[in-house]
Length: 391
Image (cartoon, rainbow, N blue to C red; front, side):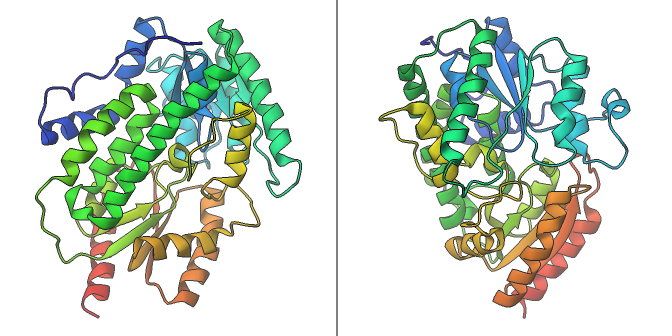
C-alpha cells in the first residue's frame, strides 16, 4: 500500500536548534500523545505494540502508524484493578493509556517477554473491542528453524494488520517500508556516533527524546526531523568537560523518567545505553532484495542487538555489555533495573560479575517510571563518579 505520509509534528519547524529540541522534549513528555490523535484525525490507523521489539515495517507497509507503547509517568488508577500489586509499573501505565482514552488504537500487540507481560494481551483484549494479539518471537534463536518460524509468525501477524487497515500489502510495499526504516536506523546510528565521539554536543535527555520520537511519529517525518537536526548538532560549539564516560544498562523495557536521564547527564557523559533498544534493535540495514518478510525475520536473528528477554547463546549479555563498554570507551557502567522487573534484576548478577572480572567500576540502581525525587540517587551517583575521577 502506498499513501502520502501524514504530518503530525510541526512544532519543531522554522525554529532554531535549541527551540526545536525543546519542542521534541515537550512532545515526548506529553502523556496525551497528541501526534497519535492528529494521525487518527487524518484517517490513519494505529497499531500499538508493547516492549521490546516489534517489526514496525509490517504496520507501516499497511499504511498504519506503529506506536511504541512504553508506559508513561501517570497514575494507573484504572489499570491497578487489572493487575497484582507486585508487578512493574510499565504494564499498568501502558494499559492505563488506553483505559483513560489518552491513546486510541485499532490493534494491540504484546510479547511474552516475562511472566507479567505474558498476560497483557489477554487483559487488554477483555477491555477493548479491537484485535489484541501476542507476537511469539523465537525462544531459541539458535535453532536452525528459528528464521522460518519467525517468518510464519510475521505473516500471521500481517494478516490481522491488513484486516484492521483494510489494505492489501505487497512485497514491494514491505520493501519500501524497509528502505524508510533503514534510513531511520542509519540516522539513529549517527546520533549514537555523536554520543560516543562528542557527547558534549548533545545532552542526555535530548538524545533520549530524539530516539523516543521514532516510536510516536511516522518514520518519514522522524527521518526528516533527524536529517535536519543532526548536522546542526554536529556544528554546535561546545567544550568538552572533565566528566566520566558512562554506559547505562537496564532500560530495555520500562524507561527511566526523563528527569532521571537529565540528572545523570548533568553528572557524566552517557556515551551508550539500551534506552528504547527495540527502536534500535537492528544493528545493520535490513536487505531489500528477495523475500522482505524473510529478510526481516533473518535480521531479527542475525543483525540485532541484545536484551535480557532474548536468549541467544551467541550473544551472552554480559559479554555484549563489555563490548558496548569497549566500543564506547566508557570508564564506568550504571547497571540499573526497573523495580519488580525479574529479567532486569536477574541480569544484574551476571553483569556485575563480568564487570568485576574486567575491573570496570559500576553503580547498581533501581528506577521506576513514576519516580519524582532524584536527590538520593543523584548524590550517590555523584559520589561514585567523583571516586573514579579523583582516584
